[in-house]
Amino acid sequence: QVQLVESGGGLVQVGGSLRLSCVVSGRTFSGLIMGWFRQAPGKDHEFVAAISRSGSTTRYVDSVKGRFTISRDNTKNTVSLQMSSLKPEDTAVYYCAADQRITSATIATMRPWEYWGQGTQVTVSS
Image (cartoon, rainbow, N blue to C red; front, side, top):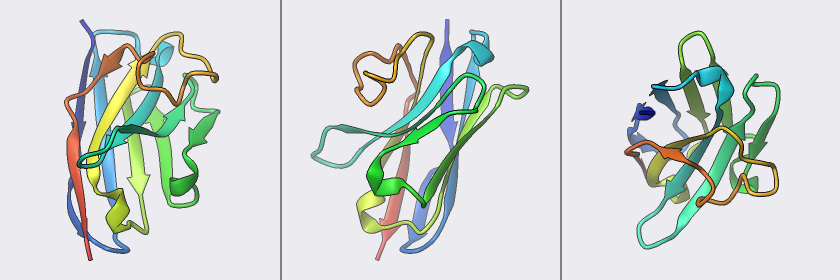
């Protein structure tokens, strides 16, 4: 059984930084494509970022490009999301996601991702 456990959320002021982490167990981590989604109050889940199995390829939603960085450590079964220059609109519950076969065509869509974490709250105060 695959488990994803996020950590690192919290309350931060506008312009601040946070680093989210997601530890994966129950599956060979290097065989998983990893991603981050978020859900703001009253809104649908939104794709944030994804990273390939090796870490050589990343993808971001336009609104976080240049501010967020996704990375992974296959020796520690961990994927991270470094968030900088945070804005109030970044406030959301952030979810870690994993899949073995997702393609570039559907990577920004929630439904194809097979495994999900429980989420961690990020609140950016102005």
